[in-house]
Amino acid sequence: MQPYMRNQLHCALRLLTALTVLIAGAAASQSYPTRTVRLVVGNPPGGAVDILARIVAPKLSERWGQQVVVDNRPGAGTRIAGEITAKAAPDGYTLLMITSAHTVGPALYKKMPYHAIESFSPVLLVASTPLVLLTNNSLPVRSLKELVALAKARDGRLNYASSGIGTPPHLAAELFKRSAHLNMVHVPYKGSGPAFADLIGGQVELMFAALPGALPHVRAGKLRAIALTSAKRSQAVPDLPTIAELGFPEYEVTNWYGVLGPSGMDREIIERLNAEIAAVLQMRDVAEAIVRAGAEPMSSTPQEFDAFLRSEVAKWTKLITEAGIRAE
Image 1: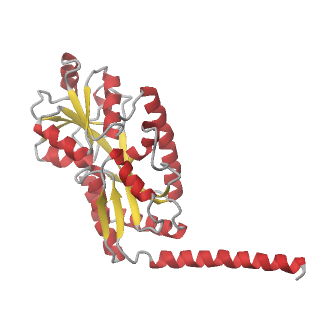
Image 2 (image 1 turned 120 degrees about the vertical axis):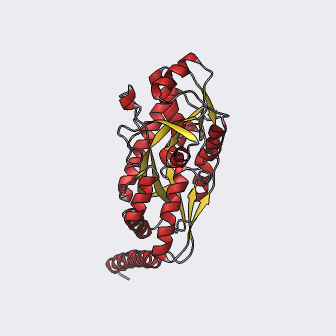
Image 3 (image 1 turned 30 degrees about the vertical axis):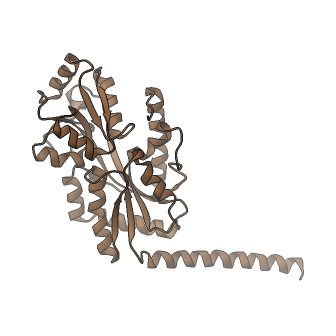
């Protein structure tokens, strides 16, 4: 065979291979899903990310005619859930609902079982929410001013809970301590559920928590909401002031939630997941449920989410390094 003809044949074979891959990917995305999809959550039931996952999952089940099961895998600062997803087959049947904590891990832990960016396929941002500063009902304060005064009077004797070292609630509390020049003791828990239980029971005195997980306890009268961490007030609790408007104008912390899949997922399946979840978030009853829970629906392209994740890793790495925060 002449060299020219051999080169032509090789080009034709490469083109045929590429077309076969494209056709297979398109067919996979059109038929996906054909079985149960697992949405892994790295926190116990009852927290903000779990609430949002359970708002979205049933709607996806209805649209697809396939079950979307929320699989809670708490522990190790959400790394257990991350590792499960990172090591799963990249076929779209194992997804991960993450929080801001996902982008904190690279700075917090010396060894990670996965890479926060490269081990995953970004799908989209789902929602964002402020955190809320809570106290138990026995603490004799009803305002931020009273809380700051009490914390200074009991220098080093007030304690605050968090859902784990390096989680957004922990970082929000540490930032507030610096802003208000307070000395308080950190009591980390394995997730927001156990932290809420001890806060309600009086074993700890205050806590920063994502608004969706906190609202049911506040509305039931089990906990007292003092202020929000966002720059603006929330639609869910319009009468609750922000820390910024109460004398700390530079203070702002928000939490966000998004969906990832394992690295190497087919582009067509990623795009379909993005479109389907975005459509669910635009449903009136879903949007209203998310707002009632204390969050705001969001959306993004996979590419936008990827850029956002990279910027968040850089931001938290800088903050954690400067503050000297380390996981135990």
